[in-house]
Length: 203
Image (cartoon, rainbow, N blue to C red):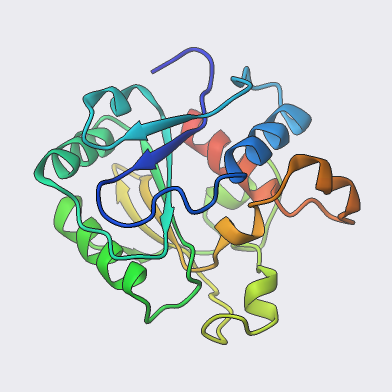
């Protein structure tokens, strides 16, 4: 684990892992804005097939297309989880019947175990900012996806802590904008990312 927090985007051989290119800079800005975390000014790409991905406490993974891990990716993800890392997977399709959802959840079940609903009173939702469950995205409210407001995130837990967190809410679209645009928001919609990182560093 590195002393300086580095926002790491997971790269995997299948699919379009780099579908939200502005998100890392935006979340780094959010962490610097609200917390005392010693955060690196730029993020990194962490190939899941490379054991160096194990140095990061938090990995962000997204995409629209099918997710199929290679043997090396599966081995490293399993070790990452066993060592206490938090893998946050966000479906960029915001579609529960989509190929990303189906294949990513299958791959996680195969690699580290089945996902289950995370209760909305879980400590994750109060580690920094207070939320009554996962914040709703504009895509859910406007019916741009599957016309569902997903009331829970899904998780695989290890020894009482979240090891893998899966979202159908498409935070990837919601947070994929230049940090300068935050000044136009009445409420910063990236605040939940602070909870994710703080949880990964302290739980």
